[in-house]
Each structure stands twice: as C-alpha cells, then as structure tokens.
Amino acid sequence: MGREDFPPVFPRTRAPSDRAGNAVVGRHAPYHQSMSDSPLIHLGSLMRSTEDTHAEGELDHLNYEQGGKPQTLTFAEPAPYEISVNSLGGNEMYLQGSFEPTVTMDCARCLREVDVPLELQLGTLLRYEPSTDAPYLEEAETGEEVLVFGDPALDLSGYLAEITLLASPLSVLHAPDCKGLCQVCGHDLNDGPCAHMAAVPVEEIDDDLGIPLGSGHAKQTPFAGLRDLDLPEE
Image (cartoon, rainbow, N blue to C red; front, top):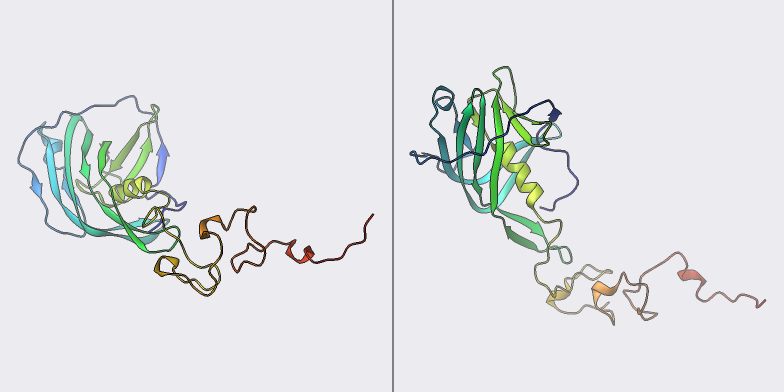
C-alpha cells in the first residue's frame, strides 16, 4: 500500500462552532471487542449520563468508503486500539485514545513488501445530530474538525482509515542500501547482477552527469540520437 493523493474518507463541511474541549479520561470498565470487521463504540448511555465510554479491541482490516467506492485497508498483523469518549455537555463529546496499525507498503526501489508499524494518538471532537445519515467531518471556525454522527452505535472505520492513510509515509525502502530493479529487464539487483548490470548504482540513473556512454542503464533522452550526428562547423 502506498499513500497517494486521495479524496478524504469523510466528506467535509464548514460550519460555525465556538466550543472545544480537552477531556479527562475516567477509569470505567471498557467495552471490549475481539477481532471484528468494524470498530464500534456505543454512545447511547453517554448521552444520558456524564460517565465516559470506552472500547478496545483488535482489527486486521478496515472496510470503508472513499470517493463513493468501497475500500479495504488490510494490516500485516492485528492492530490494537483503545478509545475513550467523554461528554462535554449537550450533544458534544471528545474522543481520544490510541491505534497501532502495521501497514504494508512497497519498497520505492525494488517493490518488495515492507511492514510499517504506526503508533497513532487519537483525538477529535464529536457531535451527535440524530438526522445525520452517515458520519462526516465538519470544520469549526477555530479550524478544529468535528466528527458529526447520527447513530449512537458509532462505526469508527472511516475515521481510523483516514488517520492511518494520512500518517503513512509517502515512500519506504526495505533496506537503506536497496539496489532497486534493473531498468531494462526488471531483475531485482538485491539478488545479484543481471546481464544489463550498469557501471553505476541504479539510484544514480536519474543523474544526468557521470553516467558512462554505452551503459545498458544509461538514461535515454530526446537528444541521444544527436550524439553521432556529423554537423558542419561554423
């Protein structure tokens, strides 16, 4: 999995809001989920009391929608999460916790799979609006984002998928000295040389200087055909 430019998992709107809160997590018994398809946290009781609500469990994947299409984000190993939600009064709450997914990406040079562990700290405002069909993020005047939801059994799949995608590095190497692939035949040079082995490291191929002429990996340019052209002297 590589992170590319992608539409946000949640639709976003901007609406006025002048309230923000920093929650203090209580120590009530958590609601525990074993391996499941969806990380759910039940907030019905929180709306009727001032006690906080907890959920914890492990996920091996997340199902969510992005750009109107169903997506699945799969983890290399079970990803533990712990979530607490505190009431801020009225229909507003604050969610905080942790999520530790291990995503699998392709090495930027040789395309080998690389497991990338992430340690994510969660923190966002919530607002309950019964008329809301699907959760969405709303930007307050302060610039802080508020997750608006309508179902008290809040599915956090989209929220966790988005913060995981945003936290993932743009590129990774399976090893600092990765030699990459042969630009001619695609052979993995980490496994040894090939018939097209260049006189310079593969990572220098994109350097316009220092590449010996005739190298099997020499960079081709639109002016390569002019090299042997016999032009009259002025």
